[in-house]
Image (cartoon, rainbow, N blue to C red; front, side, top):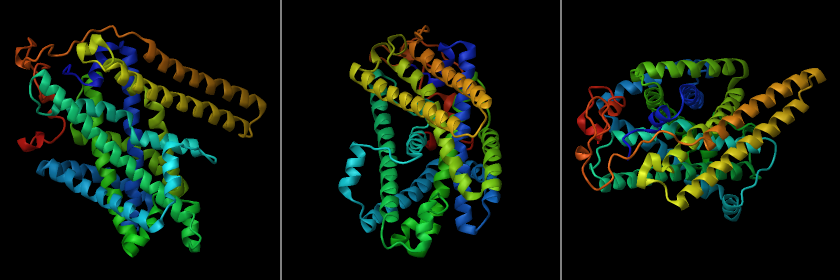
Length: 440
């Protein structure tokens, strides 16, 4: 509606220091997202070719660059291939549900009456949230809307927004169902009475590198190969979206642009370093734990993208008559508040538990507690600042009536907001040799 994406609105609304901090946090989210993709790709290469995990981590530095190069031959074809491979593994897990026969009443009960049992369960739930609703993807999708060809009228833009919402809801629903099937299958298989000793050992230390045995009923000896291919495709797909998100974040917050291959190389290098160190020291088990930590970081950073999004879309100074309805505003703020409360609760309880069982001397515990709680106070204060700060910059929608964008009186030029699609946004997605049909 406004012709700007979320990062650009942040740059226009917040002071320079706040804007810079939000940019750093968004970039950290991109790197934190890339760490699981690096390790997941390394696991896939290990399953396919028996390459050591640490070697696979190094190889991932080139894999996504190759895919970015291949996009010039048709991004839609590449997206279709990746979607097909991910759909294949999702289908396998759904079929495996029929073999493993989890207790359906328990599955449904867990959906509507969630319970967090056992040590580390809260952390796993938070990491799952961060892995599904990645903060940098909020910046990405708000920019992707501007790259599409939509009718240049209020009605046309509203229709386009409705279809974008359906598309996003469908993608999140599919991801949700895949996660449900994976969790249900792993729970049913690992609780079975007829597990052989090897599978029982895998269940006791389950990670991505061992999860393929869950599909043996469906794929037999091919389970590890098919799982590895789908894992490889999923990792590359997520990394490409992370590259684009980083492009839009940098352009929106700082008005800077980088070529996709250079942007990917920078992000991937930052992700490879911790992944390589952990895989060398701790092997696949430690690398699997790093995936959980990186996903938890994504959840902790989610408020710094979610709060500006909710405030801007609920603000009449930003959206005019196109603000969220009262019902949508209340619902989204309730969900956002719940996420923030869970994050803060987990940070405080985990830190206290770690401090009490650290084995440090009393003096060390006191100083660690002071610095730790000071960091949490800064985290809480930063969220409260974003929540209660009033929007001060007025950015009205491009159109107030059902007229065409060209008649709205906006000036044209590079990155003009007076027309869609935004050419400066579209040009960051694909190599310049792309076909015009790829922009549709």
